[in-house]
Length: 98
Image 1: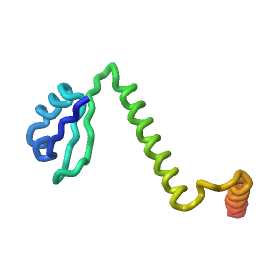
Image 2: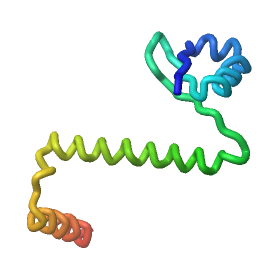
Image 3: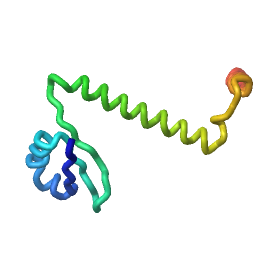
């Protein structure tokens, strides 16, 4: 699938043309000063719920990847189950005291 790039100025000046490009190209990348800022995809009343669910799955996948990357950076990706249980118990003890 091809992606059409469009500057935010062009989008604000001609939104109808941009929406038509989304229908034709399948997706449009909106840029600000040449840097990606948003991706527009086509939808309709019939596909809206599925499209939103798909975007939720993408957001979730990005969040999981960020958590995994963070765990590697912090060195917590190599914790044993015993160490994890110890961390959970300590966090619960702190919560009970509050």
